Image (cartoon, rainbow, N blue to C red):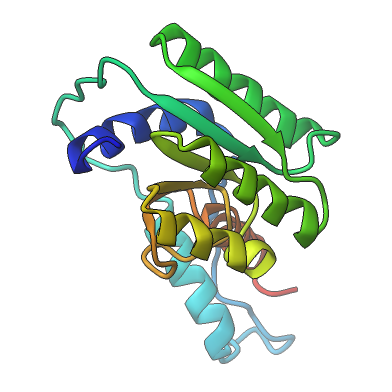
Length: 201
């Protein structure tokens, strides 16, 4: 079982596989609404918030916060529990993860978590029995496979979440989340951008 540094080094594989998992860019410019009398109408609080958030989210970063190098561990066994593999987004994430793991010479196993809690939790059972270095879960949250996450924690197998919808730090045994709730956050950003751009109309 890899140490903490080893787990985060393996997490870099998940980061590479997760790039562009859900993504869009939006920019917005907006001005206060004007009433039929020609005077500026009072801006409702929800619109003010949307405009302010959009302006903040549109700022281009001026510095890179993470600059440290990552040294991959020499060997590892990655057990990937992927969301429904009949869905292109899910299967592409698993394929990308396999390519990254293979390039590093790691052993890789994929279990299709399907579309039901039973299938997802069965994958966790199989993963625990396989005794991998780490379990990488894609697109399956603790709300779907809570018992599976608990089993992995009890077995002492570190878990890395990838687009799980889990709030980072909220699930015991999950060492890190790669874009854990990013799609939900991005969805809110896009919605606010649309509201701001149209002045709430």
